[in-house]
Length: 137
Image (cartoon, rainbow, N blue to C red):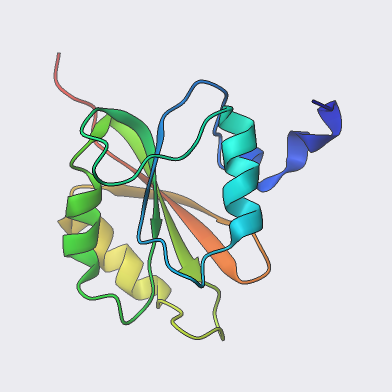
């Protein structure tokens, strides 16, 4: 493992070795290079919606025609640890299926999430970091 990978997309997402990452919304248009980079950085396979245990972060691939974003975000919270992160991966502006930034800004608080940052993670996909509320002690 080389130290030159420190600026890769998985690093920009803050994903580290040992984390359990759940992937939702996978389809044939998702970015496989990004998926492999993430699996390499966490040193594990991504888990799917049937995982049934707590996960550290969720990758939610979402396109404009995937349905109600609030419902998708609420579903993504199912297995997420309190204080965990949902990375909402959406096609970049101008690409088929692009999601309006205003739609994300509106849906996140309704789903109980705080929108923090957006990062470009591949040629066709952008990632929006949505923070889940911490679980009360």
